[in-house]
Image (tube, rainbow, N blue to C red):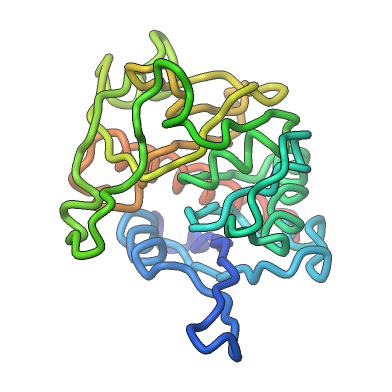
Length: 261
């Protein structure tokens, strides 16, 4: 970054988390989401509370240079894609749904970069009219993509490289890395089913699950990955390259915003 170039403002989606005593719910994200962003992109991160329409997404997008849509325990509610209702005990985050889904559409309209990770790829897909598989491991011919079931699993065990993904020939991911395949971690129960409008697949797992996608416009950076790219991206060729590309797009947006003042 040149000396006079502005540091981009990056919105980072937070989750609604209920405290153990049920008295003091909080809005938060894992510190790894912020630390990895700071490590890979010279930016100013801004946490976005999951408060739905209380934030005007058009105004929000006009003030920001990019957005990282993080993972989260809660799943996108199925009524957003005409899916079957969840069981009563399924974790949900309606405030985040109500904020992020229209936010994705506003970002595309305003040409603001978006990087979706885990839940984030699912939000991009649903925002553009796609649907999700609820429990991939219950589908015929699919593997179990969830995290280790052991409660005492270490972060290294949880985020270990789990399976290969095949990169789409001639696609963005292949062009960034020069590779046809990459190993990734795997910590998700849901996954992309019907692809949203304007999206193209960039990576798939051996059992056919969509692991990476992008909005089909080479002049915009709207990318989602199903693995947790925030885990040590400096050590992962593809994750690191995606953060770098996102940062480049966000800096270009910051320069455009400054020039328009």
